[in-house]
Image (tube, rainbow, N blue to C red):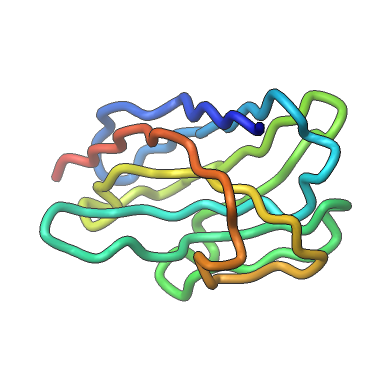
Length: 124
């Protein structure tokens, strides 16, 4: 079993920054792709970003390109999401997820373990 725990969420003003972390534990040898998703009130869960096992391939939703950066530290079994120039529309619960796939994907079906989420609130 793989456990994912997100941290780093909080309340910030528009234009501010947050760094989310997702720590994986358990049977982590099969972790390849790691991704971030978010769900805002009244909206569907949406893809944010994903990163390959080596970190050499990344994918971002258009809404966060140029503002968010995904990275990972495999020695620590941790993936990060650096969020800069935050906007009120970024307010959501952010979830990390892992997938056994070799390729980065925005498809939630390619992810088999999910964290409990961390709240990000951006005030205007």
